[in-house]
Length: 364
Image: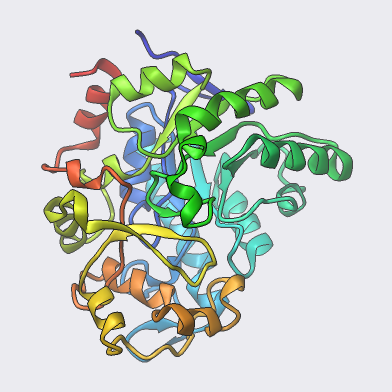
Protein backbone atom coordinates (compact mmCIF):
# COMPACT_ATOMS: atom_id res chain seq x y z
CA UNK A 1 0.00 0.00 0.00
CA UNK A 2 1.42 3.35 -1.06
CA UNK A 3 1.26 6.06 1.58
CA UNK A 4 -0.56 9.19 0.42
CA UNK A 5 0.19 12.73 1.50
CA UNK A 6 -1.56 14.26 4.51
CA UNK A 7 -3.21 17.69 4.36
CA UNK A 8 -3.60 19.65 7.60
CA UNK A 9 -5.10 23.09 7.13
CA UNK A 10 -3.23 24.73 4.27
CA UNK A 11 -0.20 22.48 4.67
CA UNK A 12 0.55 19.29 2.76
CA UNK A 13 2.86 16.70 4.30
CA UNK A 14 4.42 14.33 1.76
CA UNK A 15 4.03 11.24 3.94
CA UNK A 16 1.22 10.78 6.53
CA UNK A 17 3.71 10.47 9.38
CA UNK A 18 3.86 12.94 12.26
CA UNK A 19 6.79 12.74 14.65
CA UNK A 20 5.46 13.00 18.21
CA UNK A 21 6.52 16.04 20.21
CA UNK A 22 8.73 14.75 23.02
CA UNK A 23 9.92 16.96 25.86
CA UNK A 24 12.16 17.79 27.55
CA UNK A 25 14.66 18.13 24.71
CA UNK A 26 13.96 14.84 22.92
CA UNK A 27 12.44 16.47 19.82
CA UNK A 28 13.96 19.87 19.16
CA UNK A 29 15.71 21.31 16.11
CA UNK A 30 17.76 18.36 14.89
CA UNK A 31 15.03 15.71 15.07
CA UNK A 32 12.09 17.85 13.97
CA UNK A 33 14.08 19.57 11.23
CA UNK A 34 15.22 16.27 9.74
CA UNK A 35 11.80 14.60 9.92
CA UNK A 36 10.27 17.50 7.99
CA UNK A 37 13.19 17.44 5.55
CA UNK A 38 12.51 13.75 4.83
CA UNK A 39 8.81 14.27 4.13
CA UNK A 40 7.12 13.75 7.50
CA UNK A 41 5.95 16.42 9.92
CA UNK A 42 8.69 17.27 12.38
CA UNK A 43 7.33 18.51 15.70
CA UNK A 44 9.29 20.66 18.14
CA UNK A 45 8.39 20.22 21.80
CA UNK A 46 7.87 23.58 23.51
CA UNK A 47 8.42 21.99 26.93
CA UNK A 48 11.56 22.88 28.87
CA UNK A 49 13.18 25.05 26.21
CA UNK A 50 15.01 26.89 28.98
CA UNK A 51 17.59 24.10 29.18
CA UNK A 52 18.39 24.27 25.45
CA UNK A 53 22.12 24.65 24.67
CA UNK A 54 23.04 24.44 28.35
CA UNK A 55 20.66 27.22 29.51
CA UNK A 56 22.22 29.69 27.07
CA UNK A 57 18.94 31.57 26.50
CA UNK A 58 17.67 31.45 30.08
CA UNK A 59 17.81 34.67 32.06
CA UNK A 60 17.78 33.10 35.52
CA UNK A 61 18.63 29.62 36.81
CA UNK A 62 18.72 28.22 40.34
CA UNK A 63 20.60 25.37 41.97
CA UNK A 64 21.86 22.84 39.45
CA UNK A 65 20.93 24.85 36.38
CA UNK A 66 17.17 24.78 36.99
CA UNK A 67 15.36 27.45 34.95
CA UNK A 68 13.67 29.78 37.45
CA UNK A 69 9.92 30.24 37.05
CA UNK A 70 7.67 29.74 34.03
CA UNK A 71 9.14 32.38 31.73
CA UNK A 72 12.55 30.71 31.94
CA UNK A 73 11.47 27.05 31.79
CA UNK A 74 9.44 27.89 28.68
CA UNK A 75 12.01 30.24 27.20
CA UNK A 76 10.71 32.29 24.28
CA UNK A 77 14.22 33.12 23.09
CA UNK A 78 15.29 29.46 23.12
CA UNK A 79 12.13 28.38 21.27
CA UNK A 80 12.87 30.94 18.55
CA UNK A 81 16.43 29.63 18.26
CA UNK A 82 15.22 26.03 18.05
CA UNK A 83 12.88 26.94 15.19
CA UNK A 84 15.59 28.96 13.48
CA UNK A 85 17.96 25.99 13.56
CA UNK A 86 15.26 23.55 12.45
CA UNK A 87 14.43 25.79 9.49
CA UNK A 88 18.07 25.64 8.40
CA UNK A 89 17.54 21.89 8.04
CA UNK A 90 14.04 21.64 6.52
CA UNK A 91 13.64 24.98 4.75
CA UNK A 92 10.01 25.96 4.20
CA UNK A 93 8.54 22.48 4.65
CA UNK A 94 5.76 22.20 7.25
CA UNK A 95 7.01 22.24 10.85
CA UNK A 96 4.96 21.73 13.98
CA UNK A 97 5.10 22.55 17.67
CA UNK A 98 3.70 20.53 20.56
CA UNK A 99 2.43 22.65 23.48
CA UNK A 100 0.94 20.78 26.44
CA UNK A 101 -2.37 22.15 27.65
CA UNK A 102 -1.43 21.47 31.26
CA UNK A 103 1.51 23.88 31.31
CA UNK A 104 1.52 27.24 33.00
CA UNK A 105 1.56 30.09 30.45
CA UNK A 106 -0.12 27.94 27.79
CA UNK A 107 -1.50 30.88 25.80
CA UNK A 108 1.83 32.69 25.84
CA UNK A 109 3.78 29.63 24.69
CA UNK A 110 1.32 28.98 21.84
CA UNK A 111 1.78 32.59 20.68
CA UNK A 112 5.56 32.21 20.98
CA UNK A 113 5.44 29.05 18.82
CA UNK A 114 3.31 30.76 16.19
CA UNK A 115 5.66 33.74 16.05
CA UNK A 116 8.71 31.46 15.99
CA UNK A 117 7.44 29.86 12.79
CA UNK A 118 5.26 26.86 13.67
CA UNK A 119 2.86 25.98 10.87
CA UNK A 120 0.90 23.51 13.01
CA UNK A 121 0.26 23.49 16.78
CA UNK A 122 -0.49 20.17 18.49
CA UNK A 123 -1.89 20.14 22.03
CA UNK A 124 -2.63 17.29 24.46
CA UNK A 125 -2.40 16.67 28.24
CA UNK A 126 -5.91 17.98 28.83
CA UNK A 127 -8.80 18.86 26.52
CA UNK A 128 -7.70 22.13 24.87
CA UNK A 129 -11.03 23.95 24.80
CA UNK A 130 -9.35 27.39 24.67
CA UNK A 131 -6.74 26.50 22.06
CA UNK A 132 -8.28 28.69 19.30
CA UNK A 133 -8.19 31.71 21.58
CA UNK A 134 -4.44 31.30 22.13
CA UNK A 135 -3.83 31.25 18.36
CA UNK A 136 -6.56 33.69 17.27
CA UNK A 137 -4.10 36.19 15.78
CA UNK A 138 -2.44 33.55 13.60
CA UNK A 139 -5.10 32.35 11.10
CA UNK A 140 -2.60 30.46 8.94
CA UNK A 141 -1.49 28.21 11.81
CA UNK A 142 -3.30 24.85 11.82
CA UNK A 143 -4.63 23.61 15.17
CA UNK A 144 -4.53 19.92 16.07
CA UNK A 145 -5.86 18.78 19.47
CA UNK A 146 -5.18 15.34 20.94
CA UNK A 147 -8.16 13.32 22.25
CA UNK A 148 -8.66 9.83 23.64
CA UNK A 149 -12.38 9.36 22.94
CA UNK A 150 -15.07 10.30 20.44
CA UNK A 151 -16.94 12.01 23.28
CA UNK A 152 -13.96 14.28 23.93
CA UNK A 153 -13.85 15.26 20.25
CA UNK A 154 -17.59 16.00 20.27
CA UNK A 155 -17.29 18.25 23.34
CA UNK A 156 -14.30 20.04 21.82
CA UNK A 157 -15.93 20.63 18.42
CA UNK A 158 -19.09 21.97 20.03
CA UNK A 159 -17.10 24.41 22.15
CA UNK A 160 -14.79 25.54 19.35
CA UNK A 161 -17.68 26.08 16.95
CA UNK A 162 -19.78 27.96 19.50
CA UNK A 163 -17.09 30.21 20.95
CA UNK A 164 -14.62 30.55 18.07
CA UNK A 165 -16.58 29.59 14.95
CA UNK A 166 -13.91 27.14 13.88
CA UNK A 167 -13.11 23.43 14.02
CA UNK A 168 -9.83 21.51 14.39
CA UNK A 169 -7.72 21.28 11.24
CA UNK A 170 -7.01 17.68 12.24
CA UNK A 171 -7.31 15.61 15.40
CA UNK A 172 -4.93 13.07 16.94
CA UNK A 173 -6.50 10.12 18.73
CA UNK A 174 -3.99 8.64 21.15
CA UNK A 175 -4.30 5.14 22.55
CA UNK A 176 -2.84 4.08 25.91
CA UNK A 177 0.37 2.51 24.55
CA UNK A 178 2.03 5.87 23.94
CA UNK A 179 4.99 7.23 25.84
CA UNK A 180 4.68 9.96 28.43
CA UNK A 181 1.28 11.14 29.65
CA UNK A 182 -1.88 9.21 28.90
CA UNK A 183 -5.44 10.38 28.35
CA UNK A 184 -6.94 7.69 30.58
CA UNK A 185 -6.86 6.93 34.28
CA UNK A 186 -4.32 4.27 35.26
CA UNK A 187 -6.74 1.34 35.42
CA UNK A 188 -8.52 2.43 32.22
CA UNK A 189 -5.30 2.21 30.19
CA UNK A 190 -5.56 -1.58 30.29
CA UNK A 191 -9.22 -1.97 29.31
CA UNK A 192 -9.86 -3.54 25.87
CA UNK A 193 -12.44 -0.87 24.97
CA UNK A 194 -9.82 1.88 25.33
CA UNK A 195 -7.22 0.42 22.98
CA UNK A 196 -6.39 2.37 19.82
CA UNK A 197 -7.96 -0.14 17.42
CA UNK A 198 -11.30 0.33 19.21
CA UNK A 199 -11.33 4.08 19.83
CA UNK A 200 -9.95 5.08 16.41
CA UNK A 201 -13.02 4.09 14.31
CA UNK A 202 -15.30 5.83 16.83
CA UNK A 203 -13.30 9.07 16.58
CA UNK A 204 -13.26 8.82 12.76
CA UNK A 205 -17.05 8.45 12.79
CA UNK A 206 -17.43 11.49 15.07
CA UNK A 207 -14.99 13.56 12.97
CA UNK A 208 -17.08 12.96 9.84
CA UNK A 209 -20.09 14.54 11.54
CA UNK A 210 -18.17 17.83 11.69
CA UNK A 211 -16.89 17.83 8.13
CA UNK A 212 -13.63 16.67 6.65
CA UNK A 213 -11.41 16.57 9.74
CA UNK A 214 -8.37 14.28 9.23
CA UNK A 215 -7.86 11.81 12.09
CA UNK A 216 -4.31 10.83 13.04
CA UNK A 217 -3.74 7.63 15.03
CA UNK A 218 -1.12 7.53 17.80
CA UNK A 219 0.12 5.21 20.53
CA UNK A 220 2.09 2.02 19.94
CA UNK A 221 2.57 2.39 16.17
CA UNK A 222 5.89 0.88 15.15
CA UNK A 223 6.28 0.02 11.45
CA UNK A 224 4.62 0.26 8.03
CA UNK A 225 2.32 -2.66 8.82
CA UNK A 226 0.97 -0.71 11.79
CA UNK A 227 0.61 2.43 9.67
CA UNK A 228 -1.34 0.56 7.00
CA UNK A 229 -3.53 -1.04 9.68
CA UNK A 230 -4.43 2.40 11.07
CA UNK A 231 -5.16 3.79 7.60
CA UNK A 232 -7.50 0.86 6.90
CA UNK A 233 -9.34 1.68 10.16
CA UNK A 234 -10.04 5.16 8.82
CA UNK A 235 -7.03 7.22 9.91
CA UNK A 236 -5.56 9.77 7.50
CA UNK A 237 -2.13 9.49 9.10
CA UNK A 238 -0.19 8.40 12.18
CA UNK A 239 1.87 10.00 14.91
CA UNK A 240 4.97 8.18 16.16
CA UNK A 241 7.27 9.20 18.97
CA UNK A 242 9.29 6.35 20.46
CA UNK A 243 10.59 5.04 17.13
CA UNK A 244 12.27 8.39 16.47
CA UNK A 245 14.26 8.18 19.72
CA UNK A 246 16.38 5.58 17.95
CA UNK A 247 17.87 8.07 15.49
CA UNK A 248 21.20 9.88 15.39
CA UNK A 249 19.38 13.17 14.97
CA UNK A 250 17.14 12.75 18.02
CA UNK A 251 18.04 15.59 20.39
CA UNK A 252 18.10 13.31 23.46
CA UNK A 253 21.40 12.63 25.22
CA UNK A 254 23.32 9.48 24.32
CA UNK A 255 22.63 8.29 27.86
CA UNK A 256 18.89 8.70 27.30
CA UNK A 257 19.02 6.68 24.09
CA UNK A 258 21.04 3.97 25.80
CA UNK A 259 18.46 3.65 28.60
CA UNK A 260 15.77 2.96 25.99
CA UNK A 261 18.03 0.59 24.03
CA UNK A 262 18.77 -1.35 27.22
CA UNK A 263 15.15 -1.51 28.39
CA UNK A 264 13.33 -4.83 28.45
CA UNK A 265 9.57 -5.14 28.06
CA UNK A 266 9.10 -5.58 31.80
CA UNK A 267 11.09 -2.40 32.52
CA UNK A 268 8.51 -0.15 30.83
CA UNK A 269 5.77 0.85 33.26
CA UNK A 270 3.00 3.36 33.90
CA UNK A 271 3.87 5.76 36.72
CA UNK A 272 2.04 8.42 38.65
CA UNK A 273 2.88 11.95 37.51
CA UNK A 274 2.50 15.43 39.02
CA UNK A 275 0.61 16.36 35.83
CA UNK A 276 -2.35 14.31 37.07
CA UNK A 277 -2.27 11.67 34.34
CA UNK A 278 -0.42 8.33 34.39
CA UNK A 279 2.81 8.46 32.39
CA UNK A 280 4.76 5.67 30.69
CA UNK A 281 8.51 5.34 30.88
CA UNK A 282 11.40 3.11 31.88
CA UNK A 283 11.69 2.07 35.51
CA UNK A 284 15.11 3.36 36.54
CA UNK A 285 17.14 4.46 39.54
CA UNK A 286 14.81 7.41 40.16
CA UNK A 287 11.96 5.06 40.99
CA UNK A 288 14.19 3.13 43.41
CA UNK A 289 15.10 6.39 45.12
CA UNK A 290 11.41 7.36 45.39
CA UNK A 291 10.56 3.98 46.93
CA UNK A 292 13.40 4.33 49.44
CA UNK A 293 12.49 7.91 50.26
CA UNK A 294 15.83 9.16 48.93
CA UNK A 295 14.66 11.01 45.81
CA UNK A 296 15.88 14.59 45.25
CA UNK A 297 14.10 17.18 47.36
CA UNK A 298 11.17 18.83 45.59
CA UNK A 299 11.68 22.59 45.41
CA UNK A 300 9.43 23.58 42.46
CA UNK A 301 11.92 25.98 40.94
CA UNK A 302 10.42 26.02 37.44
CA UNK A 303 6.67 26.00 38.27
CA UNK A 304 6.08 24.06 35.06
CA UNK A 305 2.53 22.65 35.09
CA UNK A 306 -0.72 23.97 36.56
CA UNK A 307 -2.08 20.62 37.89
CA UNK A 308 1.00 20.24 40.12
CA UNK A 309 -0.13 23.22 42.25
CA UNK A 310 3.34 24.60 42.82
CA UNK A 311 4.91 21.27 43.78
CA UNK A 312 2.10 19.84 45.90
CA UNK A 313 1.36 16.98 43.50
CA UNK A 314 5.07 16.42 42.97
CA UNK A 315 5.46 15.81 46.70
CA UNK A 316 2.64 13.25 46.59
CA UNK A 317 4.20 11.23 43.73
CA UNK A 318 7.76 11.71 44.96
CA UNK A 319 9.47 13.64 42.16
CA UNK A 320 9.52 16.95 40.27
CA UNK A 321 8.76 16.25 36.62
CA UNK A 322 10.60 19.34 35.31
CA UNK A 323 13.77 18.45 37.19
CA UNK A 324 13.60 14.72 36.39
CA UNK A 325 13.02 15.17 32.65
CA UNK A 326 15.75 17.82 32.52
CA UNK A 327 18.13 15.40 34.24
CA UNK A 328 17.34 12.77 31.60
CA UNK A 329 18.15 15.31 28.88
CA UNK A 330 21.43 16.07 30.67
CA UNK A 331 22.22 12.35 30.76
CA UNK A 332 21.99 11.99 34.56
CA UNK A 333 21.20 8.31 35.05
CA UNK A 334 20.80 8.60 38.83
CA UNK A 335 17.90 11.06 38.80
CA UNK A 336 16.58 11.18 35.23
CA UNK A 337 13.04 10.28 34.15
CA UNK A 338 13.05 8.44 30.82
CA UNK A 339 9.75 8.42 28.93
CA UNK A 340 9.04 5.88 26.20
CA UNK A 341 6.07 4.18 24.59
CA UNK A 342 5.11 0.57 25.34
CA UNK A 343 7.19 -0.63 22.37
CA UNK A 344 10.38 1.08 23.53
CA UNK A 345 11.97 -2.31 24.31
CA UNK A 346 11.88 -3.02 20.55
CA UNK A 347 14.49 -0.34 19.86
CA UNK A 348 17.78 -2.12 19.26
CA UNK A 349 19.79 0.23 17.04
CA UNK A 350 20.41 3.86 16.20
CA UNK A 351 19.83 4.81 12.56
CA UNK A 352 19.39 8.05 10.63
CA UNK A 353 16.02 9.80 10.28
CA UNK A 354 16.36 9.35 6.52
CA UNK A 355 16.74 5.58 6.88
CA UNK A 356 13.89 5.35 9.39
CA UNK A 357 11.53 7.30 7.13
CA UNK A 358 12.42 4.98 4.24
CA UNK A 359 11.65 1.95 6.39
CA UNK A 360 8.30 3.42 7.46
CA UNK A 361 7.29 4.44 3.95
CA UNK A 362 8.52 1.39 2.03
CA UNK A 363 8.29 -1.27 4.73
CA UNK A 364 11.91 -2.35 4.49
